[in-house]
Image (cartoon, rainbow, N blue to C red):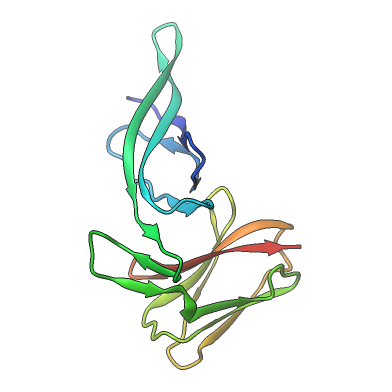
Length: 172
């Protein structure tokens, strides 16, 4: 392709939410980071994703559809992420967020040692709207959310580009 074009990424059985679900592909190689949010009762496995867009062609536009499989790690009922490709367990019980729904501010409390970790807030288009470094000494961080429109957001804790924890946040 010689011109950028808009595409939509979807999963046909709606077992996961993909953020962002729409983005622009540039000519050449593209690296797109997608957040995968499992929807109950999804417990992991291989899913078929569809990348669909309309690309310019001689005399107009042509629909381009590409399907591929993605193997998504599973969560068990004890609240631990299990990565089959790595021997790594991250307990989701190490984090708590309050209040939820939030009107003016939201607080994240954590018990883990998180050197170099960040707390990030994403809107439902996958756009990061806030980022704050997490402290090794103070195990709590508060973010003001009163300037954001009411709606659904994702709070994500990352360390070295690895997602350690994520949770839905409702701003009212």
